[in-house]
Image (tube, rainbow, N blue to C red; front, side):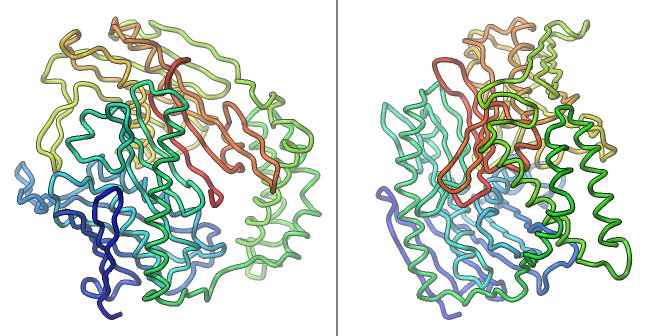
Length: 514
């Protein structure tokens, strides 16, 4: 590909995208420049689709090079090693922005790598990395349906600011990151100082206008210089397989979807899986249909029947109304020798939170592109395998645990007292002991209770809930307090925290095209 470059403006800030000079062997590679911030994003895919999976094996890694600010990492080891929490969170934001937009049946190993090579300490690189990755995908031969744009929205002195500078974010009552296409929002992650619903919705609207500009610029560039999309190997299930599986399993799926208890319902689905393996000889060398196709069809049918149950019969799996919340139990002072503790149970989801207070030496220290620092408040989220009745790995937290923990941490940040009024370091542990949906929101609820039990003079109590969405053509239903199956088979997972007057955190992932 010959070198090519475009420049456009978002709220007075020039963004330059260029390709054809660096990383030419990748499927797509783009350098993004804003001021003296430079990010390289590359995308690569495997040569052949994997035969035994029915999902996209997408890997996203984002790294902030210390050399980008003329610095070497502290400590004895000077080579940058495992990703920081900030890098993990940005990788997750990138993944969530693109995953719904890859074409159906695309199952090739795919990797997005983004590196901050230069940082001017003004233009924050995380949302810019999403834009760079979008441009790299758009000009590549990887089958993405349409480009994605991403922006950060701040709220300072009653004004919305698109992509505020690093200094401006310190005075902002809102830290909203959103991504989407020219006609829809795909991903939202935000934290605010008890802003109202109306203010948050207006911020999303302002942000999406900027996203449209980014998407249109990338689309025009890709149309001019992009590679032809490689759709060879896209796997489409034969409709006769879906029809055959539906005929043999629909009645039992309907029965299983009426079982309220999670363990019993899972047992029924396990029996159905065993029946599929036996019926279609999936464990033999000559299965009647490919194993992947059978289980993909089974998932499609299960999702369709759950949707029909909700949209046409107005019934949820556990019999609740659409806006009905599961039974809640809570207890403070649950543990005798801790500073503060609470157990919070909502339906089949349960969290034990423990609050520990200490001096400055207990602060969580970090090192990033803005220098060294220490967090006075931090939350660690633990999700052991027994919480879902499984055997699994125990050790360093995975990306999901880090993401859920940071969401709960930021949700509670706005309610903490000022440091001058309460000069203690605050550590929260959120231990998930049962999970059937919305464990991060249970962490917020139990965490707030344990703060109060420890005597932390919070400004106001905060709680959280997960909402779901079922869309079928022109019909849609919003579900309150979704459980695991509704999350897995539904179209959206929207988490929101705050109180009756304002919002402190929110996160949305959508599985359709916005």
